[in-house]
Image (cartoon, rainbow, N blue to C red; front, side, top):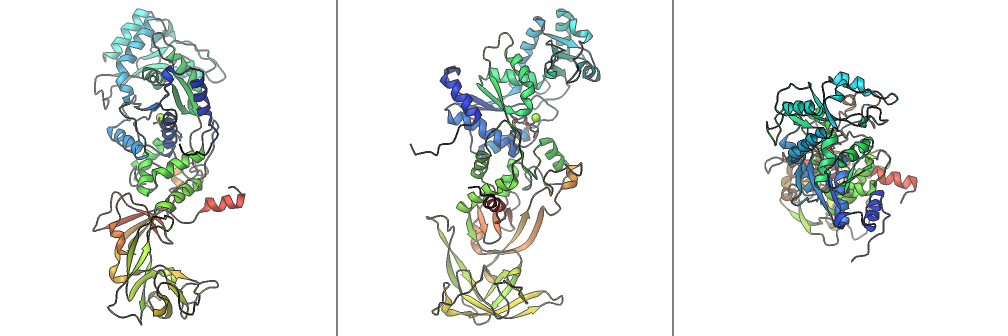
Length: 564
Ligand code: ATP
Ligand code: MG
């Protein structure tokens, strides 16, 4: 085995190791589950839960189930189920044949509910939702018993079966657990177990018109699947007594335990399916997989790698207190990863033409470029060069400011990989915009040095005009312009960044780009990291997305703060 860097155990690992050591785990097999509700696409927050659940199972040689928690038929959709599976696979995790659905347990849940009624532990309540809220009490005041709490077992059974048979309209009756209306924990004040809902379920169709509640379904699903460690986010802490109540119902043989960790929050981002759905429905983004969305399909389309996302989650760590992670830490992880793997390409996003007056008209030369200088085994590719090349508009100035080392009349620079050139003159259009720059090259400087070893300070990237590929390039930035969207404006929609997408219609790129495929990682030299758009790019119309800029604010911040 390779020597591994020893990292301190997080609190969940400590619990698991302790349970294993003390023989508290049946067959010594750790079983976790990732339980998304299929009511939207997965977001970066879910990645944390996925990495934890699958990661812990992997680390301790157990298994992790994928459980679709499909108990709310009105909001769920097969499209979501498919996307969830695709996203987990993309992240590099595998549930094997352990794919489960809460709806698979409807029959068993129903039997358990009937048993609870027979044992006098559940009753059918006819309070309206408003009345129920009223009777529930508050954090400081106990609740009151519903007048139906003492309904006879026979009557409860009869009504519950009628509910199941569709004899009663929605909202008329609710099945509730009989626990304690005076409990200091509101979740224990006779929580609802079943409600009537005349909705077609994506999997069970019209078979049921009563649906079990989350706090009843989730723990029992965990018990049925022999989950050992049921890991969820902190907002479920107050639900833990209800979880324990459900797993202690007579006849349930396995009692899993629930542990809570702090959810992932990132500044400048929203991580709530409901709000993300709202952005999609209002067409403020192109869809769930819009590269600006914090969804897994969004970051995939943006060009983030699964490795960088796992690294990010790893660096964030697991804690029991809420915090906000800096957006730039995520981008730092993305850059670190892309720096190691991205193929370097010359692309000009805002082209002006540079004509090398003393270069022969029909001559073509090819220069070898390393695909990735960070990779000792990197391949190389050839870049064609000719008399006319594109350079970035910002690389030429008629009147240079101080410390400007790129082209201006009389100044000499290096064209990357090729020759030294000196600007001689330029042309402008009727609006005074520079259209063409003329220069001469020094044939002796081929490959980047001259016999007299004179120095030039600037290097520009370039693309040969007659060999260039044209492409649409989409420059993405943060979707929200404020650190906590909606915090000051009261409405997150008011904090959308109007510059989150800038489209370059006709970028010029070296011809090697035509070999790039969806999923390749690219760096356009000096312009950032890019990828092929997985939806809109075609050989006839190349489309690239900017994954992240090259500037690294997190690295700078760390340096400033003295963090290693
Ligand atoms: P949302 O609030 O976005 O709708 P959710 O919690 O309702 O999220 P689920 O589909 O129920 O979404 O989540 C599946 C699992 O992912 C749950 O165990 C949940 O605790 C976890 N999870 C959701 N959001 C985050 C987050 N931001 N950080 C870590 N885990 C999360
Ligand atoms: Mg939810």
